[in-house]
Length: 123
Image 1 (cartoon, rainbow, N blue to C red):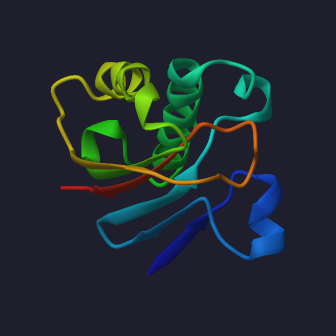
Image 2: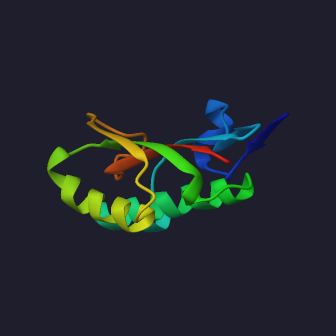
Image 3: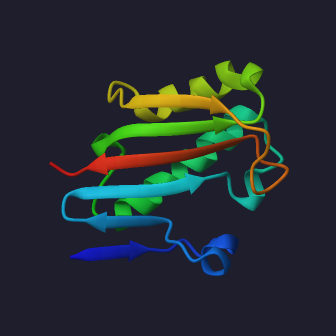
């Protein structure tokens, strides 16, 4: 059984995707940037907001941050990694999912400095 979860984000309908999809015990959350109200915050604030949006999608799928096994973090400036990492570490504490961080040239919204994708397994 498949459960599609929408956050009502501006690109979901036009691009044709879901914020998250649950199939069985697996939940995949699409790349997520900070919400419009947090895009003027710095990298740490944007990361915290993106992770809060991911957490809400996970909860709607019956999961939580504790179920996250992998994150992929896309940044537009690799030198902002320390601030981004602080927010990531705060959100995940001792959960310690595997994580990849890569620098990209741009994100969908030019104000965004970080985008995060997450995969979870409900065990």
